[in-house]
Length: 149
Image (tube, rainbow, N blue to C red; front, side, top):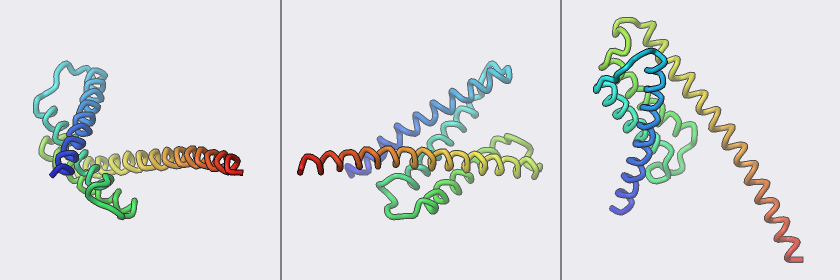
């Protein structure tokens, strides 16, 4: 029970941060487009997307629920339900005409490009960070060997 509650608190924290970031981004874009107000259903949609996306991310990449799964499979576990959530929200709120297939293909294409870009960014970050820590570990081991001589 304690692990469950800790997980819920962690999820709530990350969902709140995601929602805050989404709202800041939305406000910046809205100001750029000349809008002066935000409809309540758009705020609720951002809240649902933030909460759901954070849950899918926690499920796929967190250490508490799935262990030992390959990273590529974890990405699929995150991307497919998140794309379904975004698509369902776009459909329900009519972000663009429901009958216009080209808009839906563009929407999915943008999602895939953004997902690929973020994935590549994280891979580069992890490689750079890993090399940094490998260097620090090598330096630590070298000093320990010198001390033991």
